[in-house]
Length: 185
Ligand SMILES: [Ca+2]
Ligand SMILES: [Ca+2]
Image 1 (cartoon, rainbow, N blue to C red):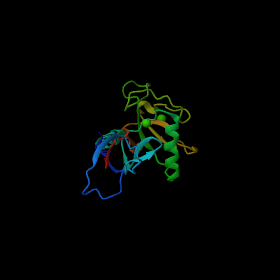
Image 2 (cartoon, rainbow, N blue to C red):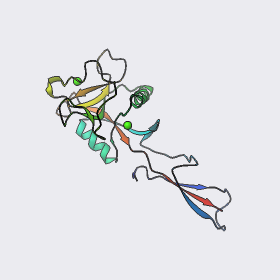
Image 3 (spheres, rainbow, N blue to C red):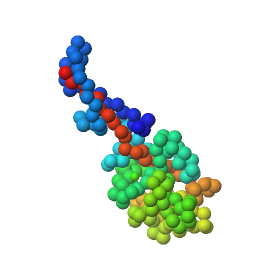
Image 4 (cartoon, rainbow, N blue to C red):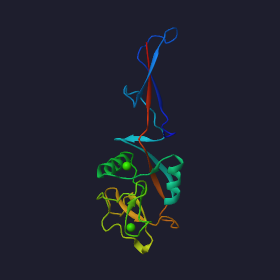
């Protein structure tokens, strides 16, 4: 179970005082009574859980920061997930660059998500990207890539050793495991 989401929900079926009564307990998977859960510092967007790191760091440091939270740099399995994150950033007035888990460090030209090794299939690249400019762009961020850009798109940039490639980052946590303990009279 993720430490960060070590949520243990206790739900009382009866609102009578518990003391003085004999109660049976029942364990239920998940959160069948929709007890509010605080996932801070992660925020839930659709069915994903994300942390938006505001420091400007290289890709490796961003990866480490996510791992320290028992999460990974974000992976966009679907265009809908990308669009939801873009909409979230837009709603906050954020236009800055953010690292994703995408890279072609294993094999130049083969872009995979680092967290699950799956190829990047979503069509959200900025025009003419990824271009591996200067032969040193191997890590993928989202941002307003060009001065004329009007939406978030993907682009490859140097993973490190580039003062113009220090970006914010997005961590994505696995779905929380929750268990509900129900006290019944
Ligand atoms: Ca994802
Ligand atoms: Ca590029």
